Image 1 (cartoon, rainbow, N blue to C red):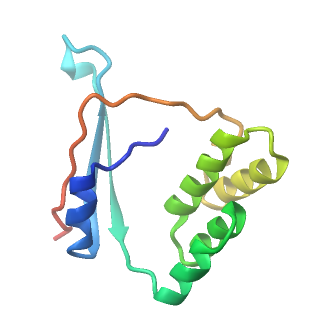
Image 2 (image 1 turned 90 degrees about the vertical axis):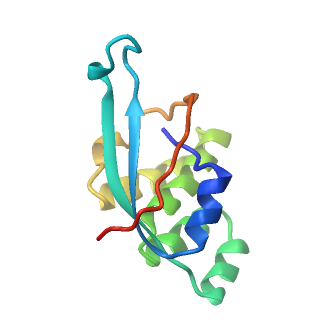
Length: 131
């Protein structure tokens, strides 16, 4: 599952690098919000140097994902592969890279699970950095 960050959130995050606390609530029953499933975590926004950015921009999906992994940015590496999987889910090379990446971050159990499309009803973001 992927969730897009609103443009306003992207613009604000570019003003300051660092750690951001995120939350995602899945509303299971709008009449009993105590049944919501709430996820949270931290993500660090980092700036890549221009050389790496140029190599990423000139690369195909697999190479782009590998370059991002080398920089320690596995979330974006996974996103690149997920986008390619949506375009061609039967492509063996993409599935192999997908499985390898998920295994490298301890999520090998998810490698065979299908990607799902979700519709968000409300997006919000936080720009508060970790204290």
